[in-house]
Length: 124
Image 1 (tube, rainbow, N blue to C red):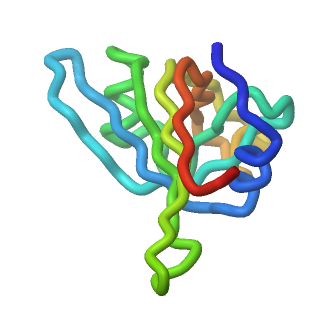
Image 2 (tube, rainbow, N blue to C red):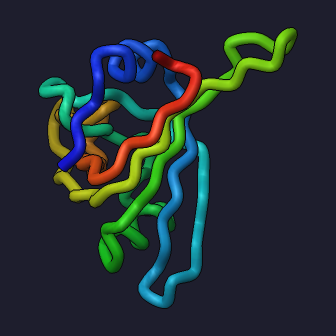
């Protein structure tokens, strides 16, 4: 398991939108924008949302838990200054329930992504 640096955590907590890539059992890729948050223990990324249990990303994770998620933005366009973090890891589906416990208040299931590889740029 890889761990986030303090600078990476600070950056992640300042962002709201990411792009998450999943693949189905046959390896067919799928990438979509998602909302996320850093877990309370700062060891994972949590992804969920409206109707999460009915999405392709949810179905993909059920059969293939290997995922990648990218959180990035432009600190400046003049000069061009991209920054971001790529996290590759394993997603573990979590049950919903009253209050949800996940990244958004919902009774929908959600996913906890445990990093195995973290690559960041323009942050430190």
